[in-house]
Length: 278
Image (cartoon, rainbow, N blue to C red):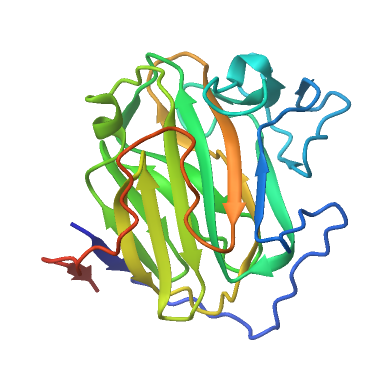
């Protein structure tokens, strides 16, 4: 069941025009598609030549416990994809004790896009309570909406004015329980900026788990995203890894999975029993 929660507070915002960042090394999306398999030189956060890989950029200089930084490494490669390397992200115990993330920026803002990546969490990793991890986070300054894992099996799209939330179909469904088994999973996000008639959709392993008419407010497009991001919280007491590979972006439509699965790209019926908290 999709739930929409409206924020209960009022924020006063001065009406200044938003200027997107000028990025000299941004990714060209004029063809409508872009992808990376991280088939670059091995590298580690804060050590030259970090970060040089297919137009990707570093975001954040913080390190996980053990002084572990983000990596491009063969150990993070998804063998069913392309290339021979992947991105390794480190998650320390407790809350927000992760390595830096990677930023993906386009040369011009995209008003509609599909973004897909494959990810795995180290076998044995589990999170406590109403855990949360931002799995895609706008790195623009216009509101910075994000999508996160939430609860034992849910997922949220958080905008400037509301939260669109489902409570089932994600973590516990992927692993048949609360503990990661180390397998790879596909996440795909569809965002469309159209004021109060915007769109947010999320697929997990080809299953559409969230589809919402979304109020993006004044946002007219997105230029930068960072991934993965902070977690609350790793309950293992250990620093463990999360790998990301085979990232792709499209402005023309749903991205075909690399791994065969039961993909649902049809528009679902309007959700029933919709709860709106005011």
